[in-house]
Image (cartoon, rainbow, N blue to C red; front, side, top):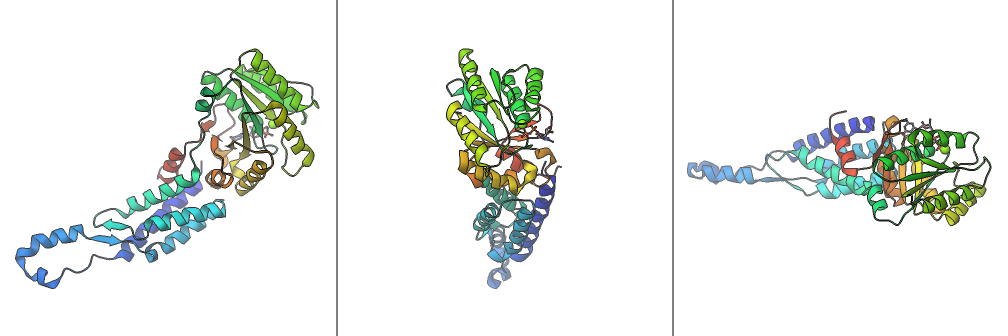
Length: 333
Ligand SMILES: Nc1nc2c(ncn2[C@@H]2O[C@H](COP(=O)(O)OP(=O)(O)O)[C@@H](O)[C@H]2O)c(=O)[nH]1
Ligand SMILES: [Mg+2]
């Protein structure tokens, strides 16, 4: 996951270290009168070891430019890349570095904080469900083929393993074969599914799924829907109707990490049009860049909840910003 970006970040870190180390030079000369007096030798040593380097703008300008290029080349949205750069510039400029203190440690911690700042806090779905009236109704939306249906199945499996009862509403009544696809997933996972005929009104299906869940004291309703683009008026109106009738507690926008900046732009448009409370990015396993994962929460102001990491039911991980950043900044592939 995000291997290309990880590799490039290593190089940028090395660039920072090299520049700061060489540009800062040696500590200033010892005052001559002290140097001549052998009795003062002890005191002078202390002065040297206590001396600090001050990191200046010119030490970091070039590696910061390199970092910005790396971020942009890896699909990080421009405003987000700029925010990261500004954060590090502010943090490092004028920073005092003691003789003997490693440049790498300072740079790493600054880069780490800058990334954490834009990644947000993630979304604890299990915690949310525990503190919420039942059933918790979760509506999944997004464009075609990004992995909504697979994500519904994965999250169903994840929630079942976390001890919750789950019902799936087969709200994609539009695409041929969609009902069968979700039906197969639900059966394999032993999850109850509510479905109507192909072509039926998805609002009616999802309303039934909610009613069923109420009657049977189910914890969570997962509502799959047909893919749609935000500029297709009819389909967006249909989504609006689903929202009014089903009254979801959470709207989850699903897109694929590999779509990079397109995913970020689409998420922004969906958020504006129908709202979104959280985001799932699928196919992170196929994404060497990581730009969408880094940019999406900051751009739309909604947390990233899960990353999809493969085609199996267990290939989904709750988005943990600290873990992602540690992973990105570690040397291990
Ligand atoms: N590699 C990979 N493939 C995924 C992931 N999530 C979904 N897919 C695949 O993407 C394709 C489309 O998924 P689907 O759930 O039908 O998308 P939908 O049209 O949005 O419902 C399927 O072949 C899935 O197996 C993921 O996290 N990683
Ligand atoms: Mg689907």
